[in-house]
Amino acid sequence: MIAKDLTADGILTPARKQRWQSSTVESILKNEKYKGAALLQKCFTVDFLTKKRKVNEGEVPQYYVENSHPAIVTDEVFNMVQEEIERRR
Image (tube, rainbow, N blue to C red; front, side, top):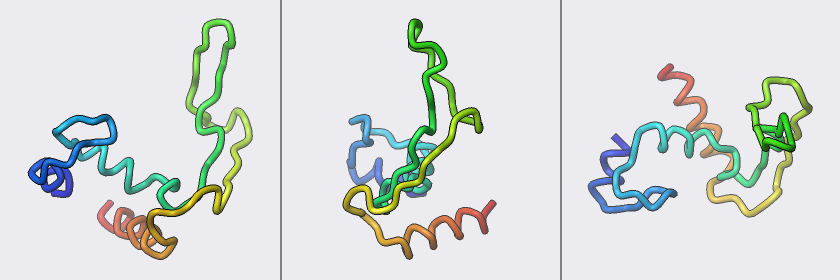
């Protein structure tokens, strides 16, 4: 529903496309960067020569940095969204 509303309102996606996908909205709603935090090393480079990257599934340590940049939404709003996503799952 959010994706349809954003498309209807003519708001461009982060990739500057006109049509929003529900997966794009979902990734934004789950992204901790909007509350001013950063999870480092979500991906890592497996081979520097080929520049092959891999999603980190515990191979290297991850670091969670709070207040790394100005927040767009409060912690409370972000946490409410995460609870609602979990409830709907």
